[in-house]
Length: 466
Ligand SMILES: Cc1ncc(COP(=O)(O)O)c(C=O)c1O
Image (tube, rainbow, N blue to C red; front, top):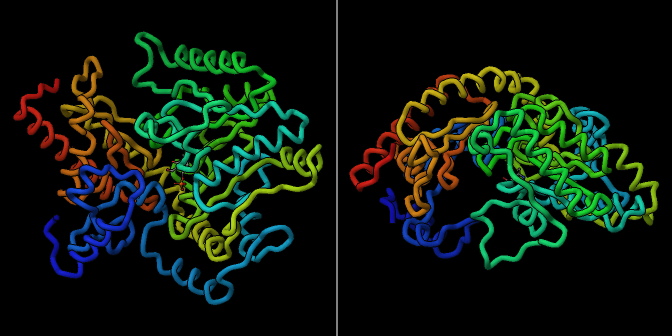
C-alpha cells in the first residue's frame, strides 16, 4: 500500500482495490500497488488523495480538452439536470439539446457530413459505424459487402466489434475472442519503422499497394468499409506519410467502400481544428466517429457523423424503412448540453488557435529529448505527441517487454509531478488544449529528467542502452 495521509484515503484505496475492476488492469502490479486515487482537477492539473498535484499530460484519457473545473460548464450541466435530466430520442421523440447539437455538429463537420447519430462513447460510435456499413451496403443491394479493413496497431475501442477492428498486440489476449471472418488488417503507417531504405513517398506507395492487394484478395464485391484514425493514437501516435489518407480515401470511393475516419481522439481540437480529416489531411470521409473532446470529458457522449449521400441510401434505398440501432442514452439531454457548452467555450476562448500555436512549440521542445539516451523517436502533431524508447538507437531494437520501459519512465515522471501515458515502450502525451508554453516546458523538463534517471538505473542493473 502507498503511504496515504489519512484513514479515509486508505479506506477508499482499499475499497477500490477490492471491488473495482479497472479497464486494462495489469493484475500483478495492480494487486500490489492499487490505484492512484485522483481527488480533484483544475485546468490541466490534478490532485491525488494525498494532496500531491500533477500536470496531467495525458489529458485524462485524450479528453479533457477545455480543462477541468470549468464552472460555466458545471452550471450549464446543473441547469439542464434541473430542467430535463433525461428523455429518450428513440423513434419520433427528441429534446432541444439533442436537436441543437446535431445541427451544430453538422455545421462543423466537413463536406456533406450533415447527419448525426449519438452514442455514449468512442467504442459505441465505432460500433455504430460498423453496423452502418452493413446497413448501407444491404440497402444498396450488396448484402455480401460486409467485410471491413482496418489496420494493425489501431485502437478503436473495447466493444466486441471495436476491439476486433483494433489490432494492438497487447489487446489481443488469447482468452478473448475476436471477429475474424469479416474484419481484416493491413499494416500501420509507422514511418519510424518503415522498411530500410524507403523514403516517405515510396513507403506511401508500398502501403497503398498493400491496401489495393487486400481489397483484391477479399474481393471488391465483399469489402464494404475501411476504418482508420487520421493519426493513430494509442497505437503510437503514428503520423501517416504525406498523401496516404487521401489516396486511401480515393481507393474507397472507386470501390464503394465506406471510409470511416475515427476521430475519437483528433475530433474537437486536438490537431487545432474541429476535425482533422479535411482540415489537416485534405479528404472528406463518409463517416466520422467522435467522442472524448466532444464534451471535453465532462459527460459521456459520442457522435457518429455521416454523409447526406449515405443517409439518402439508408432512408430511401432498399431498406425496410426502419433503422434498428441506438442506445438508451443516445441524445441524452444533459450530455448534449455539455457538448454544446464545450463547443461554445472552445470557440469563445480561441482554443483551436491555442493548439495551432502551442502544438508546434510542444513538438519543437520535445524533439530536444532526441539527444537523450533511450529516445529513439519523438513524433506527433498538435497536442498529440509520443516518445519512443529503445535499447539501441542505431538498430531501433527495443528492451524486452519485462523491462516495462514506458511504465518505468512514467512512474518516475509521476514522482516528479507529471503524468504521461505508458503504452509498451512508448510514452504518449495528449494534454488539455489550453496548455501553455510554460506547461510545455514543465512537461519536457520532467520527462527528460525521468528518462535520464531510468537510463542510469538501467545501466546500474547491467543493461547497455546505446
Ligand atoms: C481512436 C479511438 N477510437 C475509439 C476509442 C474508444 O473510445 P471509448 O473509450 O470512449 O469507448 C478510443 C479510445 O481511446 C480511441 O482512441
